[in-house]
Length: 324
Ligand SMILES: NC(=O)C1=CN([C@@H]2O[C@H](COP(=O)(O)OP(=O)(O)OC[C@H]3O[C@@H](n4cnc5c(N)ncnc54)[C@H](O)[C@@H]3O)[C@@H](O)[C@H]2O)C=CC1
Ligand SMILES: C[N+](C)(C)CC(=O)CC(=O)[O-]
Image (cartoon, rainbow, N blue to C red; front, side, top):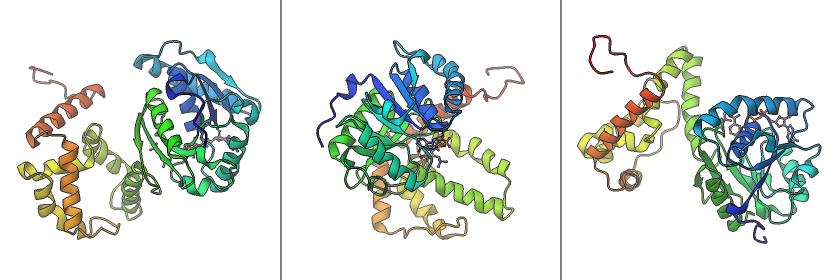
């Protein structure tokens, strides 16, 4: 592939293809970050719906802070896919999650977009290798998987396919960072990427519990929002579980609770918790802690929970007087 013609820091024009929940969310995000955005969606009512979505997102984006020059007036709705892509410096595809549709659409986008410009798909789980089959230049096609709503949730998972150029992946990762996203760049394709792999495991168990009458939807949701979800907003599942091992950290946690992986808590096949997996988890937690001790992490976790409670208006009221 030829190098992308525009440096990530010099991009001013972004094209969003597909303007539903996610495409519309991307449009709002890029407008708020001060880009010129061109959108295209084949649905007849798409322009009206898109403007409604952007208007609904704007107060939150204004509260968070708009970048210099950000304006809803910088949105252009194109009449055709070709018109939308003609001057694109980056393309984000957010069409329906259907493999054949994505294959054909990505080939069309490749044909309509200036040479070297990176084209990212918002797909929730298809590997790019399976989607880039019809494109004349598959080297610039990659996955940039967002989270709903893309204008508030920072994460984008970036990963190429077998025929994607490494420089396209590096360019896109840098571009998303410049555009205000938090990026995880994966060096191999994993169906579902990282976060959806995790979310789907949780989701599968939730469905098992509902299907078997073991818990209600509300109980399942409350169990997360009043429980582990508070920790996960700032400390991931590995480090929070390392703290379950007290001063012994992840090593003690695995020795103590590891055997319960085989208990009937889960309907999923558990991995074999052999020595190599144990070591990888312990080492991974040490690395993720970046020198912080267990006590440091406990203090950070506690402060984080308080901050999240405060931010979501759920701080316990001081009914008997005293501090809030
Ligand atoms: N909804 C979610 O929470 C998330 C969805 N995604 C991914 O984003 C993509 C879009 O999903 P949603 O926005 O949820 O779907 P959606 O159904 O809300 O929007 C899809 C849009 O694509 C348009 N469309 C239909 N055919 C098209 C074509 N040939 N070319 C361009 N646009 C076309 C539709 O008119 C519609 O406006 C999917 O790949 C999905 O997996 C990724 C992260 C989260
Ligand atoms: C429901 N979903 C699988 C499409 C969700 C995602 O892909 C990411 C998200 O927003 O949670």
